[in-house]
Amino acid sequence: MSEHRPSHAQLLAFLKAEFPQNRCTLEEVDEDGSVVVAHPVGERELRPGNTVSGPVMMTLADVALYLAILARIGIVPLAVTTNLSINFLRKPRADRRVIARCRLMKLGKSLAVGEVWIFSEGEDEPVAHATGTYAIPRER
Amino acid sequence: MSEHRPSHAQLLAFLKAEFPQNRCTLEEVDEDGSVVVAHPVGERELRPGNTVSGPVMMTLADVALYLAILARIGIVPLAVTTNLSINFLRKPRADRRVIARCRLMKLGKSLAVGEVWIFSEGEDEPVAHATGTYAIPRER
Amino acid sequence: MSEHRPSHAQLLAFLKAEFPQNRCTLEEVDEDGSVVVAHPVGERELRPGNTVSGPVMMTLADVALYLAILARIGIVPLAVTTNLSINFLRKPRADRRVIARCRLMKLGKSLAVGEVWIFSEGEDEPVAHATGTYAIPRER
Amino acid sequence: MSEHRPSHAQLLAFLKAEFPQNRCTLEEVDEDGSVVVAHPVGERELRPGNTVSGPVMMTLADVALYLAILARIGIVPLAVTTNLSINFLRKPRADRRVIARCRLMKLGKSLAVGEVWIFSEGEDEPVAHATGTYAIPRER
Image (cartoon, rainbow over all chains, first blue to last red; front, side, top):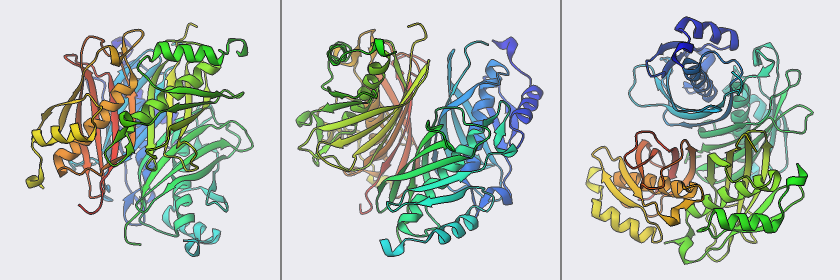
């Protein structure tokens, strides 16, 4: 399927079109199809206590999974999340972006399953870990 | 613990303070402590194809769980989500609010576990189902 | 699809053939397709401390989901679990069977999603709650 | 806590006492506390179609998580699983043992969260991936 692999610019354009409200940025697409996606952390992402809100990390995980799939199969607008499960592990830093690294565990004909590790930028210990499943439309 | 149960107004005030960016509204608190929470659906919540974005439903599930716990144990700002798992079942309507009904399955000393059903307002079939765990701080 | 609905006896025969080692019994199949499945609790299911082991409850949840799907779509031997998530809520009784009640949340063409509540027989409070997804083979 | 770390023999003895019915074997305990656990695959573990049954892999994941925690915190019989979520990725081989490698993502005072990869012995591609949470008793 490598001839279908979209360029970084194509993925970015798609991200902007598909999730217009969303503030994630695509940082890297690796050879093996894993992706790195970032989310800014500012007043809109923080909760009292200087914690990044859970929904910001869930959004980041969902977008990272989607981009990891598209990076492998090409731009397929109708792929939909069927399941997402996230464990929150540590308090993220309030003064750093949150960074997600996503790798697919399985890329089947109808289902893709991926794993996402989320970090505060520059830190070693993960703040969250998610797994998710996307259904891929049959006729593509 | 019933003497600690916050009023609807107290929960609303807390929601506004704790999640200032968030657009969820608390609709009902039932006798048994289950809650109904709504999220508006407009341009900011939609994706191309007229689908409500997954992160909107994850946010709604997380807030509903949090409010269901607070409705039972009182305002405990430091409760944190440890795990959230969501299944997306059907495409939500683009022209209706999404409504979450959350009920606790367990309210222990250190962990609370709840279930959330999400519907497009006025529809019978759920669009998503989530379960989540919150850790409750020990000294309260 | 009602003409494909297998009888209780057909489901039992299939369960015995498909999971020969397994000790679950099918107790009820309701009109709406929900099922009740039981697992005996004896020396083999208990752990020190008189707790029913987690894997017994996971087995019960998996079998209940499978039977709930087959009760609706007919005997489809190749349906496979793709995801199962379980929350353990309370300690089960050592002197009672564990009973699972499973209901489908969604029955699509390629995916079925169900919910399982597990109880110690005769008790009101659930001991565990699971959700699971099965992939249904395309050509049936 | 390194002085509390049990020996391989102590973990084995505990496994045999705590899960007497269970056929898992502890293969390795690494420096970083990750563990490798195996389950035999024979007539009792197979389903028609020569597939290893899902409950065998769930049992293996649960035991691997438990041993990974005990390898780090010492023998704590009362630790209990609170949540386990598993994705089944590929069909395991019928003629090989299934092998789980478990690593903790977080080891807190009251909760431990771990990740388990399951393989057919000698194969590169995982057959399943699980995450799980254990509650650790407070007074230990």
